[in-house]
Image (cartoon, rainbow, N blue to C red):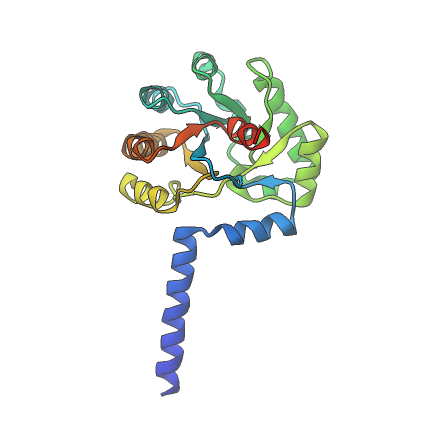
Length: 238
């Protein structure tokens, strides 16, 4: 009997965890904001406006496909680019800016920021900023792999950066399925959301297909898809 009860609660726990991971409830993100303030996950608003963010570009193939899809649906995004990928792809960065998208700092390479020392993190931030600032003024920093601590936020703020993560992440670096990503995004979307997707190789191809699926649906639902700065600025003007 005890084994049956234990098995039941174990199954129930697994189901609860799976639901939390899929639906990513905002109250959990709110707790994270209270524990370590200074990170943007979403905006509280009733207006049907959401931000799209795309990490890990530029890619000389997939980024242009993504830009084309965004233009088709009059959607805008904040591209958190890795500075070491910019050399040879400068024209893509210029295209992002010319299409009124926003650049974000995703440091110099795809290493988990939380594993860096404070000095290493600051050096990577500044090195990436030196490259990005040649193209545009950059407001937002997203730590690589999404993990952070208080000191990283202090360093970012010290150099006039704000830190942004997101409220909808369809695990597209782990589950390369546009069907899953589309379902997860559309199941969780609400005013003020920040979507996190990824660029480059298979990730970028998956993002392009995902955007083709979700953007027309979001448009029909009356959502406006904007950059993170546009989302924040819209809430401040209310």
